[in-house]
Image (cartoon, rainbow, N blue to C red; front, side, top):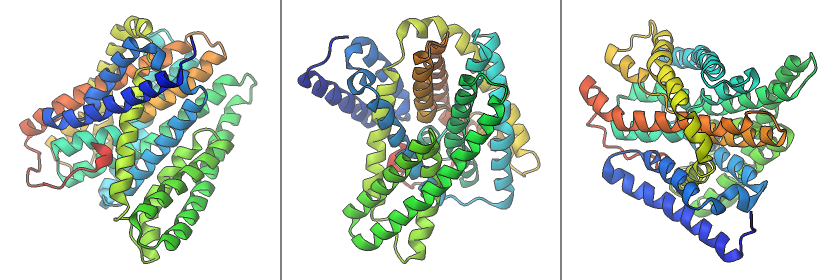
Length: 415
């Protein structure tokens, strides 16, 4: 492909930022989450102007930029979790949804990828790992519109936010195992996973230290406080990723969960910095969805559309209700709330980013069928986001579970 001029690169950047902002402005007027517009607009942008795809413009730097922006998004998601308390039974529900539900989803999705899409087992298992990833960037906007009761919102938000880094790290572990050819590859994968968790924990401790020192130095300056937050996350996540791939995502989440508590302990608050930080995250979400959706090759997308839709039907109508039935058993959750939870498992930006990153690496290794990973993941993301985004409010109205008295404004990071 011909190398772009500086003017053409500037035009590409302007178009991406303009399109993402326009989608996020229009969506509230249509009473739909912005993601419902961002995905098709990004895909169309890739069809109309393939020369403006950011992986071509930025080269290997694109993957780095995506990883760091996703880390920032997860940090913000972790901060939001601290405002959503869970009762004893609800904690058990979240544990079961994550530690029982996610493996069920992975196994079924992997089997479907092999038998329906014809993926080799290694690729099928990796795609299945992508498809357990949900996240606050997709769950939050839908819940902001629907406004279910606090208990349902808390469970779904915690589930999605925890699955983001765990699913991404799991996919990378499978990728490492897939590349290995020795009999000890499984043990190596487990070691890699544990090394990732250790790296993430140590990096998070270092990031929190940077946040404490920087926060004390800037005192109550909201602008510099935002810079401290952003800088601490980027430094810690970047260092973690240099040691173990994608461990920066877990680092960011751990920092987000602990940062508000650490700030309160030292007599400060993150509240003045949050509006600025949320704006950064909101812009990042829009740009990421546009740029990653633009990478999906249309011929492969079309060829995979029908069989992948079948997998989406399987995941939405069979797997998710079973997972929720298991996760909520004996928790005292109303039937209508359980029905709504069964209809809420959209996949999001971390799934897309992981599919893009791992898919590119597998293509470079000349693995047969690797070029199908991102399109297949994208179809599932697009279907679940659109389906849940457009039907969640009517379903909530039918089930009479909407908390219409809740007039609290949504987090800018989740709009």
